[in-house]
Amino acid sequence: MLSYSTFREAAESGIITSADTTRKALSDILSKKHLNAFLTVCENEAFAHADKSDEHFSSNSPRLLEGMTIALKDNISTKGIRTTCASKILENFIPVYDATIVERMNAHGGVIVGKTNLDEFAMGSSNENSAFGAVEHPLGNNLVPGGSSGGSTVAVAAGLVHAALGSDTGGSVRQPAALCGVVGFKPTYGRISRYGMVAFASSLDQIGILAADVPTTARFFDAISGNDEHDSTTAQLPPTQSLEKIQRPLVDKFTVAVLPDSELAGCDPDVLKVYYSRLDILRENGATVIPVEIPGSNAWIPTYYILATAEASSNLARFDGVRYGFRATINEDDEDAMIVRSRTQGFGAEVKRRIMLGTYVLSSGYYDAYYRKAQKARRLVLNGYNDIFEKADVLFLPTTPTPAFKRGEKTADPVAMYLSDYFTVSANLAGIPAISIPAGKSSEGLPIGMQLQAKSFDDEQLLYFAHHFFQLFK
Image (cartoon, rainbow, N blue to C red):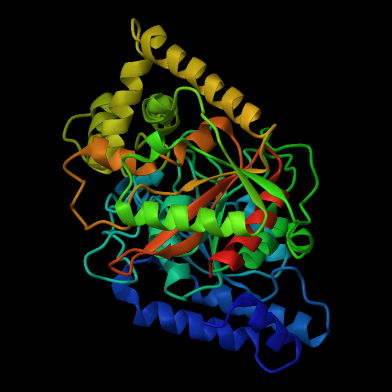
């Protein structure tokens, strides 16, 4: 597929149409069905929006996302279109309203071609937890694409769409982006509305953007950012203007913070090789590199999984088979038994594991020992980041400890799977913006991503540096 910037230039010149591009996208989705990236394809809706886009191109009035083919993670509400969260319990659920971000995409000319596969209720790091089967890495070889936004990431990496939306609760956009070689951006918490996104952990969840390059990411961010009266957690700020700002030349001098080498001890040698070589490139282009520490880094993973599972156990209590979703059949007239059986049969193993863990840490006698301590640790993480960004423009670190791993390699060991998110969860705990950009390849030719993080609401500056670093790393 043509890059969005190339497509847009051709469409504005009348060389290509949005309808043709949409037709090609739908054809490619069908021909690459083996990737299992899509759960629902929205052919009729896509062509209707593509025709409107062609009208805007013809009248020289293209909107910000005009004709952009887009995939949506299937935990984002779409009116009249199935939204499953890749779970049996919502297998046939059809929402009656659009998420705010869907309304904004439509208003800016985006063309949604389908809903993508994910780890069930966005709980996972490999996209092996879907009730509808695992997602294939575009390179094959039985590799995982990462998760939980694996379907959205693969849709971009395989060239099926110009861009995609995912959700990022602990790295679920950035981690698969790194494993598949695309850009994955998690904005500041509250910069994009979560209204219409099915909640996993409400204080950590954030809509994220996946694309092949930073300009497309910035354009998408400008279109969907901004305050929303339906989501009280959105900041009272207007939409961003990041697409214009990233085009400015790279400043002569800037400061890049890095973690101590001891924090990188668990990284694959290929990841470290790319990391250090890219730091050398940054130094050659004006960067002053300073080592920093974030207090309690050894507690990032336990802190995240205590808080996230606690919130999940509360958020997922609504899925009981009574109001909507899967309802188990029972012989006796016993509503409690029906609810228990519906949840037992409707949720997958990983979701049930996290619900039980969350219920445990919130239970009497353990609340102070676990949940309250995790809240205090979270505050330390935020304070540590505040100190870092008084001295540095961005923090630069690997996105993942390893390149893509084999399917089934970590499913028997949940802790090993959770450690895949070691470098990503802290940004969610602090609510700061973070982005993964392609930075190199492993000795086996697998993509390796590097991550940039910045202080809260410095999203535009983060995208600015990410754009220039991406160009330097090519």
